[in-house]
Image 1 (cartoon, rainbow, N blue to C red):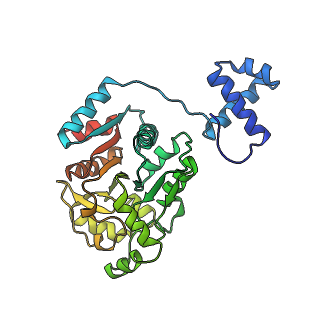
Image 2 (cartoon, rainbow, N blue to C red):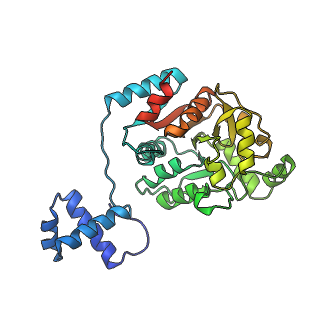
Image 3 (cartoon, rainbow, N blue to C red):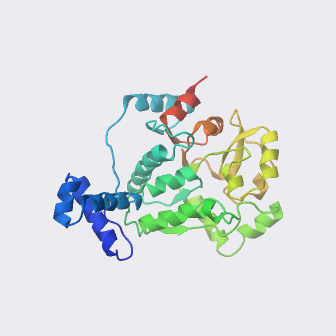
Length: 317
């Protein structure tokens, strides 16, 4: 439950001590209050503070039969090497807590599995998985962003994924200091040739595993919310028959790439650069079912992390 970072103030230190006594020591709040010389009410506030600041992380080990069955069926239907299904936590829209927790397990496994370069996409779900990671000392590791991330809405910036990764692991996180979408194919070529950017593009070819999100083509898609593409662009994409997006590439319901006119302007790896890498997507929620199914049908994914309800919906006829 410890944290890596600047020196703690007195209340921070006391809140972590209280959390240790409560969660690791199985002490009641009254017992903690007597030991620390504070009131039970303050103990409650201290433990709550530790939870809010991310100092407390609870893990549950062991498989769930229904989730394992869903994972097996998804893997068999879409030719996936790995499927992780988080239990349904009854989150109303985007299941960030469920997929974030299971995604963190995946990332932890990836860090242990290989010392190679890992590429990361964008998305709130991927951000939730990184936020759920325990802190690790991975100072000798390298991660690379798989897309340009300069946006008008900083809070929704894909760079946040890389910043979170660097903060939690101490690894070197290479970002793309360019927009997601160039004004023209010619501008894209100029941007990718810039000093500093060309080196990142080369790292894309070295990434043996890519961890990505899946987006929709709805008017409120994250690409639009983040200011990465204009609302009229997503309207054109939807009219072209696309229903799902991965790394700025769009796919129709059958999993076929859709030539939207954006691909030649997108600063992310080209489609022909993706195979035969391991590509694992983190995505879920009722609004993303069609998009997830479309990307799965593309045959580009080798793995998927989602939640129970989404898995059931994707498998439904």
